[in-house]
Image 1 (tube, rainbow, N blue to C red):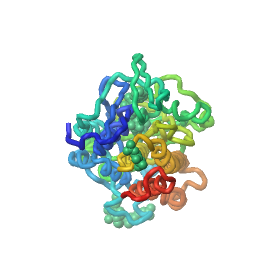
Image 2 (image 1 turned 180 degrees about the vertical axis):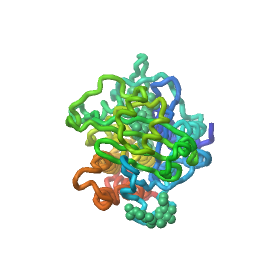
Image 3 (image 1 turned 45 degrees about the vertical axis):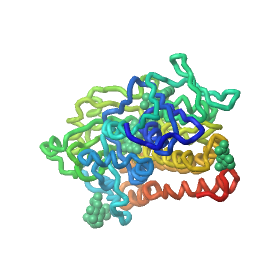
Image 4 (image 1 turned 90 degrees about the vertical axis):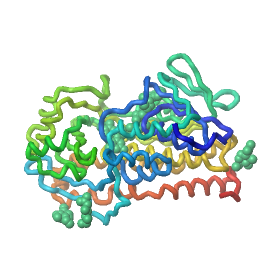
Length: 433
Ligand SMILES: Cc1cc2nc3c(=O)[nH]c(=O)nc-3n(C[C@H](O)[C@H](O)[C@H](O)COP(=O)(O)OP(=O)(O)OC[C@H]3O[C@@H](n4cnc5c(N)ncnc54)[C@H](O)[C@@H]3O)c2cc1C
Ligand SMILES: *[C@@H]1O[C@H](CO)[C@@H](O)[C@H](O)[C@H]1NC(C)=O
Ligand SMILES: *[C@@H]1O[C@H](CO)[C@@H](O)[C@H](O)[C@H]1NC(C)=O
Ligand SMILES: *[C@@H]1O[C@H](CO)[C@@H](O)[C@H](O)[C@H]1NC(C)=O
């Protein structure tokens, strides 16, 4: 437990979901003197045993939330590295197609990290202060507004909880989303892409004669209807691998995955799918002994992330494809802006709705821009080899500049803009800091 300012605000927040975004939010709110309860469906906080890439914008958001130092303190696990992807042909001798590092001048400010998700959890949990109450086995089923204007959360175990404001951080299958967006306005659909994930030690790959610099670079092996992304974690000792395959014979949205969205699959399924790909890809897949297969779902952009005193953050608001490694980074940007606004000296129970509207005005267009770019990026990677997508120059034409608007966004500027609009509309007094 860490020390944080004792709660000073006259409103109480409930966070639904204790994933990466929910927990970052709990820490950020506590540092602003805001009491919060976290309700998590699982019996404990847990993270999938995979890597996650965080861009420079994600790191700046985490810094603003007060959690970055705890993460970087694990230097063995969270070394800052360049995020510029090296694109290689998936087939043949893995010839270099395009080096994103050539598209612009990058500095250390453009660095990010690749981190093992459970390590993120270990770093952030000790930052949760005593004033944050955590409740497990609490699966939210619905949220409604009471006669007095507070929010009533119902759980699957039959219990309820009242709060002044609810933050829905319950991930891609969010139920809090139902309280914000009407059924006909939200579409969570299978993207026709599956992803096989796993981790392989770099030493093992070296012994297999792998020559691609998988321990120092983010790499993308591209080809028609398939691609494979790798990034180093644990200071380059481990390579995080995600292999994607898409069925383009049917339109997106026409297939419904009725079974589990994540399942263990025989390694042979993966080997068969990448049959004929080049040496380094084969070497990686050979050592991906027990792959898990993820059916990648994404939201069509929501019109809004807010209704009344309920705000969505993270995948609940904008579940996107992972092709730009930016999903959770957008969630951290949500949480950073929300914590700055809720913690602003002029925010209290009387203007919460206006504050959430200001949050929505900034976050909805930006997160949805990243969502749409992510989808586009995947389609480009898996067009390599088709007419117009065959040479390094053609691919550069499609890919150059795709990350800069995500990485270099001014998060403090967002706060300034939101506060200015709240003053302009009279929700905040005109003369404060
Ligand atoms: C294959 C793959 C690779 C990815 N790689 C990257 C990457 O490199 N970089 C990146 O930025 N993003 C990546 N992502 C996306 C990233 O995983 C998500 O954006 C991120 O996990 C979202 O965090 P979250 O906290 O919003 O949701 P989650 O992490 O899903 O957390 C939601 C939490 O809410 C709980 N919950 C769910 N329903 C309820 C309920 N009804 N009531 C209470 N609690 C509930 C869950 O148990 C969970 O703890 C990847 C995704 C996939 C599938
Ligand atoms: C990128 O730059 C490096 C070194 O500056 C060079 O070796 C490489 O060929 C360039 N790649 C492309 C695709 O232009
Ligand atoms: C990118 O290019 C610069 C300048 O050529 C170089 O110093 C840097 O190491 C390169 N980064 C990566 C990730 O290759
Ligand atoms: C709440 O905040 C508004 C705007 O900052 C302010 O005018 C009002 O006096 C505050 N109310 C209370 C009860 O503090």
